[in-house]
Length: 217
Ligand code: ADP
Ligand code: NI
Image: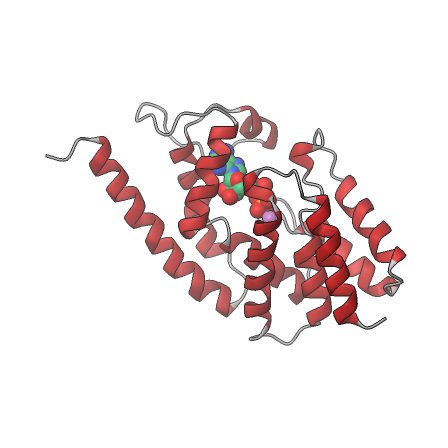
C-alpha cells in the first residue's frame, strides 16, 4: 500500500477516535496542525510521510484526559500503524514525535530530535497562538471553570506540571505563562515567521482586553 493511502486511512482513523474530543483537541485541531505542518515542511528537507503521520497522530490520546497516562497515545498509534504494515523505522519515528511534541512545562528535556519533530512541534505551537490560540485558551479555561482575568493574581512563570493542572489561575495568565513565550521557541524559519504575526495579534488582543476591562474612558 502506498503512503497516500496510508495517510488517508490515518485521517479516517483519527477522525473516528476524536469524535467525542473536547473543542481544543478535536479533529479540527488535528486538521489545522496537519495543514500548518505541510506548509512548514515545504520549506524544509524532510520525510513528508513522517511529518504527515506525526501531525495526524500527535494528540491521539492526550494524557490530560487519560489520568496523566503518557503511554496510551503511542500505544494506540503503534497498533494502528502496525495494522497498516507501515515500516518499523517510520513507526518508531512517529512514536518519538508523539512522545516529544508537547510543550507542556516548556522546559522538559528533549530526548529525541529530528527535523520532522521540529516541524510537527512548530505546527502544534502555531495552533496555540493567534486568534485560534486565544479561542482555545478561553475554551480550556471554561472547561476548567477558571476566571477570565483577575488583576490581583499575578502570572507564575515556574509551576510544576501538577501545580499547573490544578491551578485556578485566570486564563489571561496563561498568555504570560505560555502563549507569549512560544514565538521564541519556534524551530523552523516558516514557523518563526507565522508565529511573529500571531504573536502581534495576541498583543493587540491583550491591550484591547485591558482597555475594556478598565472601562473605556
Ligand atoms: P497541545 O495539545 O496543543 O500540545 P495543550 O494540551 O497543552 O497543548 O493545550 C491545549 C490547548 O489548551 C492550548 O491551546 C493551550 O493553550 C490551552 N491550555 C492549556 N493549558 C491552559 C491553561 N492553563 N489555561 C488556558 N488554556 C490552556
Ligand atoms: Ni496538539
